[in-house]
Length: 241
Picture 1 (cartoon, one colour):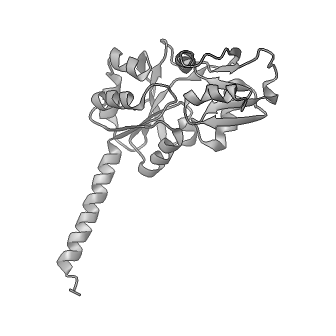
Picture 2 (picture 1 turned 60 degrees about the vertical axis):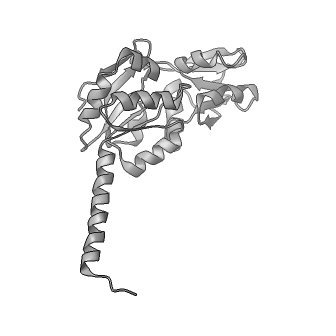
Picture 3 (picture 1 turned 90 degrees about the vertical axis):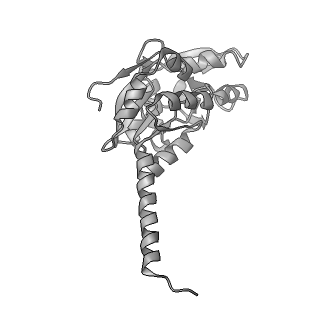
């Protein structure tokens, strides 16, 4: 066995340091994206890669994959539902997307029967878009009441089957997703209630990381790009970086 020379050791250490520096640089320029929508992942990722200031962009179809990657790489910037900041205090909201010219929207609570009146005794289906430990608080905050039980799915397309197969009594869905899902499912549903106004999909910047180039690219998204992402407008938030 050949002896390990000092030069080889120094070379290995140098490679490890350079690799770590490269990883940090990629994390500093990365944009991770998750929001529940029926719009294809690839088309959204293509738009953001083209118009986000040269950032390394990854769009996720599932919240859990997104959340795990955020913890793993601490990206400079994320696009996520507005409640992301509750579980991630190191990230501050800097930009907000608008749907139908509003920075807020109201979730719809839908059921197969108009007879459903007491939501406290009902089972709710919803897309997983926040950490499980705060999910009940999220439900209570959105619809103003807790529920008997809830069942999460990974994507909006799975909500209607929950109703049809009676796995839940009602579902929580955004107006934009409901509009698109109506074209895919023929089942008649009834609006039981609307949620309190909720802030729209938000861009968050990690404290201590320079995300100015990414934010600048997002601020300049064209009307066509915004439409492909499911939005009508993007606006800078007061106090943002």
